[in-house]
Image 1 (spheres, rainbow, N blue to C red):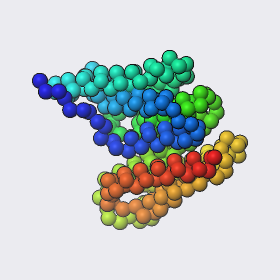
Image 2 (image 1 turned 90 degrees about the horizontal axis):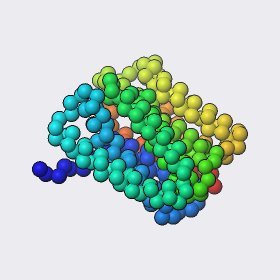
Image 3 (image 1 turned 135 degrees about the horizontal axis):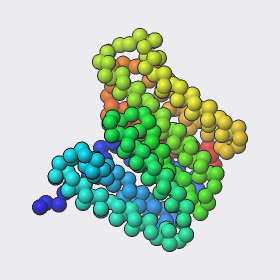
Image 4 (image 1 turned 90 degrees about the vertical axis):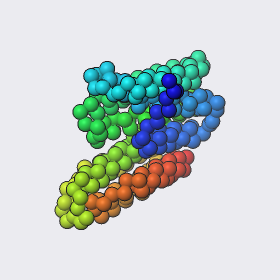
Length: 268
């Protein structure tokens, strides 16, 4: 029996959703230590276990996955979970007990995403549920860097969740329009297809402005959302049935990196 090849998620954007918030949390905290490396490897292990565990759950739920795929999922689920546990244990021994809170919230996100994808492979709600769990890396990294479990951690999660939620609505708008197979659309149809996308971005701006009003963030924090907001509006107005998802992925990755840089700069 050959050792199965590593099981890696095909959702490449999820890597950015995990690691960009983590970097934001570390940089905002202003300190770096070996503990961050321990947390990074632990988070990576748990993150990679997502696909094989989902496969196992579907098998146990009565949806046959095939013997080869099932065996590979068992092997890599064990390996990834072992890695996640091995690197997080030293942090618990140092007294980072609030990591339990993040672990519970992450588990809720994981199982929520699983149950939401039982009947439909992807939806806005299932993707937002996944984003909610992955962006916990921001407050977790901040907590490990500072030892503080405070409002800053909550605000970090809120900002990163809201931002990556923008990508969810934008991509689903693109998926929907690509199924129409129309090269051109009237402006009214474009606005109809992009209604949720525009409403969500307006909601995000309102929340960020409210956070600055109550002085949880500086007013300039809204600048970090400007490129994505402009892209969302422009992308809606220029909607066509031809969507190059690979190029879109690279563009959203660049925007997430820009978001992280701008947010850290204006918040310090």
